[in-house]
Amino acid sequence: MQKLVIRGKHPIHGTLRVSGSKNTALPLMSAALLADGTSTLLNVPDLRDVNTFAHVLRISGAKVNFDAQQNKMTIDAGDISYPEAPYDLVKKMRASFYMLGALLGRCGKARVSLPGGCAWGPRPVDLHLQGMEALGAEIDLDEGYVVATAKGGRLEGGVFRMEPSSVGATINFLLAAVLARGNSRLENAAREPDVVAFGEVLQKMGAKIDGLGTTTVEIEGVDRLYPVEFSNTPDRIELGTFMIAAAIAGTPGELIHLSNANPSHLGDAFIDAFAQTGTPFYMGPDYVDVITPESIHPVSIETAPYPGFPTDLQAQWTVLLTQSTGTAEIVDTIYSDRFAHIPELNRMGVRASVDGNTVTVEGGQTIKGAEVMSTDLRGSVSLVLAGMVAEGETHVTRIYHLDRGYENLEGKLADAGLPIRREEYDEFAEPELQTA
Ligand code: EPZ
Image (cartoon, rainbow, N blue to C red; front, side, top):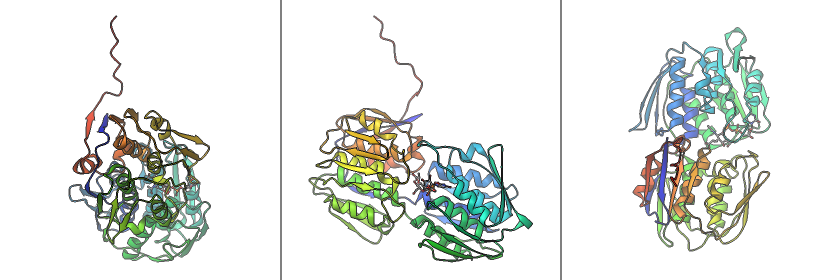
């Protein structure tokens, strides 16, 4: 098992480079399955989730080569001979459920494990299944697997209105609808930049889609899609994470440069909230410059689907609030229990309390280093942020959670001047008994 060891109160400086987006790379990889040829994806981050999904694609028969050093992936989907996605992989990475739409669209049938729960509770897939049925699929459940079949071997197309709006269900619907016999319409579709970039790849492959980025998406089914070369978008959640790091862990008055970014993907709500903290920042076409402020105003936020405040940044925002000059609240309207990181932060002296789907955070805090445990991906990075501003040393354990979604985080932060290192440790070592 591995942990990160961080010595706090060592300001970061210089440049932090943003990697390719995890939540765009995964749907792009599933889109490649729809064409019987070799697609090339660039700016693909070297993450556990990406490597897990590459394995899922290989099981279906695709040949996947990933040059992690070059962040370049080729996917030869010429022979999808095994339209299945097994439990032991889907349980590790929920987005493997995109195989349902991809295999139904390409092969007219699919057997995909239900994802099961995740660190912060149930994450249903009912909207995914309803969307497939709206397109004409027959859905059965068999020993924890979804068995989906298109009558006559090809989906008909159809109309589906989802409630609530779901990123994953939108992606699965598009994967299945673009090769359907007829036309389709998706209402209350997700508008995240991840979805728009994914839809643009499908269009480049020959799909006929209108309304990307709006809540109503129209699809005209086509008979065939063609392989594509596409450069993945930068990760908007990593960008937001780095903007928060620059605001709380730099030297007041100094500029920190965030490169290889796309600030337009942050959404107005996050940009407005960040501006209200009083942190000076400038958004360029492919970078953000942040000047660490002398003090940070407390800003309450409420998460919402894009362009609302991303739920994937609420844990990080908690740490920013601990360094602000007052008390503020975080409300997560998307997930009601995504707060497993709060008790870990409490161990560092953070005064934050959870009531239902609301966290109240006091500012002006001196945080003390401690050994803390990662519970999920974004919770894990909030512990790293806390370690950066804590007095003394912080050990963040179980960082396999972090490795799912942040590429070489400790390398990036070390290059920016933070004393941080990765260490092996024995999770089950018994503490030494003190002999009398
Ligand atoms: C995507 O998950 C992201 N993952 C998540 O990021 C992100 O938190 C989430 O969108 C919300 O923005 C990827 O893109 C791989 P949803 P997804 O379906 O698609 C409910 C990270 O940290 N819902 O948009 O699973 C659901 O319970 C990850 O990178 C249903 O009720 O999220 C939630 O309340 C974590 N039925 C809401 O919709 C369904 O069938 C939004 O979930 C599906 C979802």
